[in-house]
Length: 294
Ligand code: GUN
Image (cartoon, rainbow, N blue to C red; front, side, top):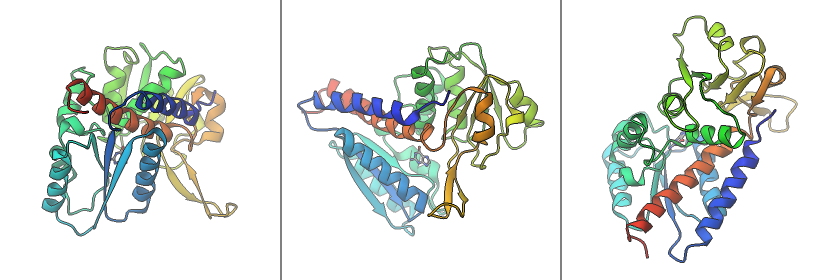
């Protein structure tokens, strides 16, 4: 079965929109910071702000020059941290090479860290306190599986890729002792020996390595669940644009072996955005509860 991430994300967006409409207070607000002109980041940032508008979240786009200093970016974040009208702050990655992304992430107020990248929120997630912000892509995958009625309890999940944005937090969520967790987790990366064998042992494969069509049919066991996080642009002369977007999975050949698989596009991608909206609403709701919004 092909999991329709677009449809599930749309359902969630409708739920978020209805919840926001039920408030008589000011709308939630997300600040999105983009440094430089990295073309894929420009596309992602636009998608995020458009999604905000569709559900009634106000967004502020801060487009900053690639040659700004780390100190200048920290000062921008400080302004956003101190602005009571802003509920969420997202600094789009990657940043230009002269800016240390960790230093920037550390500086975002953890209560506005809707990406879930601040060490405070990462730590909370790791120790199983789920009331912090969870990173959008792994959370989106968890919700995608839950809404598809996939029970991962006791299953062997293989996460391929160990990034701070996807692989590491994904493994943490899958292994956590909570509903939607309780899996047996293996993390593979570029130094893993005999990846095909590891793959064939897995009930669930989550792949996020940025290698077009890397996961082949002979690496997947019959009935496996495959979640494809990759977004890769490859040349395609038959397309008007001259390219097509493919995932990290050789979808055409892998899909027939799977019990569930996510497509690219239309799988994990829309869920990442839906979870960003979810986290922004969460931040807003926490402030509402504390009487900080009128
Ligand atoms: N770059 C790629 N994915 C992400 C994400 O989820 N958040 C941010 N801030 N940057 C990204």
